[in-house]
Each structure stands twice: as structure tokens, then as C-alpha cells.
Length: 280
Image (cartoon, rainbow, N blue to C red; front, side):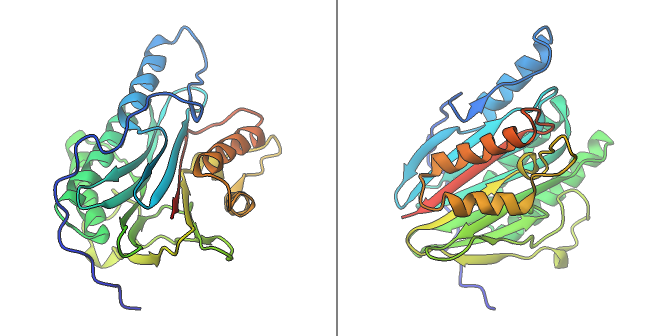
């Protein structure tokens, strides 16, 4: 299927177009060992400076974002909603391998790398390709092996369409009115694994009829594990979206976080990041 044309290059992102709300009911700190001040401080800095938390409305879009820290060291999940001054809106979610300060640094690199490449007017496919090159160069500089799953979607609010590229990120779905939720399959490999093999990077698109719901989460939800060893899984992720298809975006975010916590016996092993958006 031929992709619809993408609008002209994006202009500079609007200043303060997304509110950085700090902590709220969808973003709580949970760390083992109150005496471990350095971990607590790192987690607090990560949440306050890397995430636009809570719920908000952009013309034609109602969205909510939530983040739940796991027990122990904070990981490298990021979620970002950004409103450009040509009224395009980007949705990003990523899960960086590893824990602690290094993962947090890589999370910042991914978040602001995506914003920067999108601001240059690159298509989602090329945004991920550029991020992949940056990530691989950083791995070489730091002499480490790191990778990330990344979903990046760019919404044209006037044409009601989202072009997206997914670098190995599995838990992203859309639900059109009257239909079952549908996964947005990966269109590219994990970021930081393959050195600029452009033929591996593709993109796709989805039409956003009025009422269409978009939801994405990191594997802190899908890989939440019960005492039996069973995973929460993709099916429960989709079932939750289906069950709350008519609910406000903020409630959908909270339900996914709460259900992952309950499923794991309140012992999440990985951070949880969630974004939900309804296109009005």
C-alpha cells in the first residue's frame, strides 16, 4: 500500500507546548531501601525532567501519560508527547536496555534525539534511522553494548492520519470506533543493533477517524510477572484497551498501570510507561 504524502517539513517546536506537570496520580515513586538516597534522587530527576506527566488536550487530541517506577534501580523507559507549532503532534515511547544512571542518560538521548530529528522534517522512518546512527555512535564512544525499542508516531491533526515507525516496539495499538484493538507491528529493528542498514527501516500509517484511540506502553506492562511465572502479555494489554475503549485517556493509562501492578503482586520488575490518546 502506498503511503499518503507527508506534509512539508515541520517548523520549530512550540515553546512550552506540553506541560511538565511533575508527579501526579499516574506517576509514583517506589524504590527498595529508603536509605538508598542516590537511587531515589536519580529516579526523581528522571521523572521530573524527562516526562510530561498527567493529562492534557491539544486541538483534536485528548491524551494522558503515566509512569510507574519498579522496585530497585530506575530503568530507561521514556514517553513523550510533543506539539509542534504547525499543529503536528508526535507520540514517542521507548524502552532502553539496562538500569540506573546510564539507562537514564540514554533515555534522555532518545527523547531529545527524536524531537530534534522530527523538527528537521524527517519522516518517522528517517527519524528512527537517524536515531539508530546516533545510538550506535554513542555505543562506540562509551564502549558499551546498548539497545532500545522505540515507537515514534507523527500525527497530522488536520488530515487525521498518523505516520509511524516502530523499532522493535511491540506494545502499541489503535482502536477505531466499533472495531477491536489492533497492534501496530514493528516496522524496523531495535535501535542500536544494526549499523545504518536503511533497507531494514520502514514506516506505515493509520487513519484516525473521530474517536480512534491510540495506546502504547513499555514492556513493564506486558512482562509484568505473576508468582506463577505467567506474564501479563499482549492479550491482556489489548483486552484492557478493549474494556475501556470509551473511557477517558487518563483512566486507560491508570488501569494499565494498576493491572500490571496487581498482576505482579505489586512487585514490578521493570518500569512502566504508558501513553493513551483519543483523536476527537
